[in-house]
Length: 307
Ligand code: 3PG
Image (cartoon, rainbow, N blue to C red):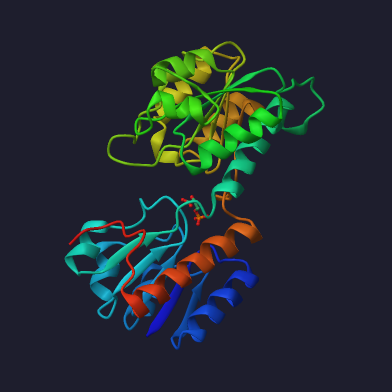
């Protein structure tokens, strides 16, 4: 079988070497399309691929149509909003993710961003400390729980909310459950966002929630840019000169935000939460192993679509 790794933002070299070992060790062949700059390159590369490994690369209906031999696509990472699951199902292509494999890398970035914002982006202005402050975790999955643990080790108190995890379970996992998302925002000095981008969550964090935050609060988004209502964020930052926003992927209005609010806002130049050697290895090797297990035994663990 031909396994294509198509990554506009490539994996670390060691991860590619590890994927190659696994794929070739199982008797398959590996093809590599890295740093591609046009949709056409991806469409051409998938034409004869039996399996596909991607990162945030968009696997659209057009890609699914072009990939005539495709049987499985694995998103090496957690969020799968870049996969058109309906189109893949229509072609009877199994779609999977690799949950948890990037979690520590993203959690470390969330903590780093929190401290970076407390220290005014490492400018000489007087900053503040995180010890003794409260962090609110919006969605207590693999990443959120790790952020909570790390924040606790920094002397912070941790509150969390998750529509899929009951309050008792959140308490058992060491955080104070918030009764609602509104309570989380109104009680925490920092809110760290870990919700996926879905039709329900897109644009769900806006003016009303953000302005509930206490004086001097910071919102940290290492999830998806789409979950923020950008006009609402801008209005909130305008009305509340004490609030700050840090995000792992620039909002569409970043230039305007930066001009208006300076160091109160920060965005990474490219999504870099999972951009560590360790996360690349974890997620890349997991993807390769999942594909080999699928071809060998029909294993469909972590399948996201049904058909
Ligand atoms: C994820 O959902 O796992 C992260 O957002 C990683 O995205 P990336 O592979 O594009 O870095």
